Image 1 (tube, each protein chain N blue to C red):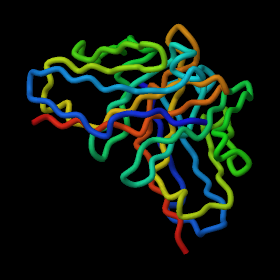
Image 2: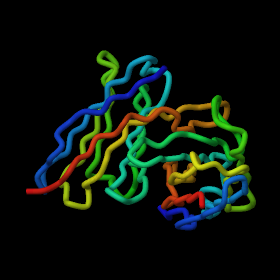
Image 3: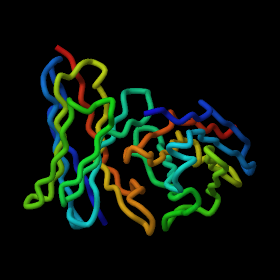
Image 4: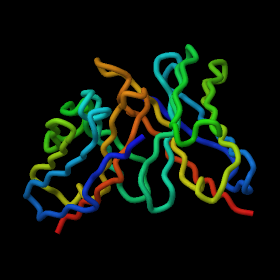
Length: 121
Length: 110
């Protein structure tokens, strides 16, 4: 059973960089894509980025330029950095596995519990 | 990227069937069979309930079914139960190799 555990500061100041890490256990980090999805309080889900262990990365165009996703295969960790944050970046950030169930890489099948990041001075 | 559209809320009585629509464009739902649906109960992480429009993962009730017509995908919940009260999100792969979620639909069991 794949388990994902997000960690990182719960409070980030405006204009600074948000940094989160996701520890992957119960499965190989080399088998799938890994993603980040966020959810502002009381609002819907927003896809942020995907990464494959071979290095392929994809970003939400609305965040591109501020966001970077990376993998550390030796530690089985996926990381997210989001720069120049504002209050609009306040959200629960989920680490998610993107898998292929026969067709393309299209299935967000395992989700972490999420971690709330608040942007405030 | 354009957002998908879903009704804000849908309600039904126990035992009834309800359908949630998810409308996109010819660059996402209309172009690919890669539409998935997620159930999110209060305070929890989303849970995959349908993928590739019509397929259910192991362990998901067969009361959940999906379809697609043109650029609109639909989720139907049959035999509505109180445990089905939750928010439901559709998600589609896009022609830009990105993903887009719908705004979510709140399902209320009357």
